[in-house]
Image: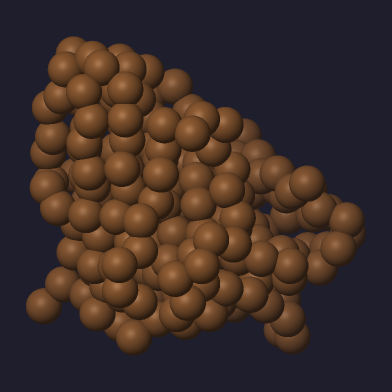
Length: 113
Length: 114
């Protein structure tokens, strides 16, 4: 069975600073990896996804993530955060057999103006 | 226009009662899902449906019953409600049920059981 760990429950950064949100997964095969964002009182929105190929994937709003197989990681990055990026970010994994998404605990991002 | 509609947005129920959560998707997708998010647990998968057939059930309790009357509908019936059922329930859909197809989520139904 697969699992996802987001070790940082909360991250606070200043506006304009760079950002990295950590995600590690556990799965013996080739995973499909996703980052979702949840704004207050809203559903989840897909930021980016990795299936195969270039390990660095670009997403919406300047986000990117890098798949490092040797480290079982899929960290999310952004070069310069904006206050509107404040939200909860979820890393998720699914496998080839079905499309059940397994989520991490989420990281609450607070951007200080 | 919203592509995945969940109704109602908020729901308050008493212990022991029964409620139905509605989900409709207008994305033309063939697979639909239910997830639950509570204060105690992260987002957890409940069910998946493909072409109106149950594909996967990860809920331990038979009190949770998905119902698919149309291809783009996947309702969730919850019977004998308990306070522990209090959570936000999200419906999602994807083009197909195989791994890797991105899932789109609805806005959720927040259920409170008193």
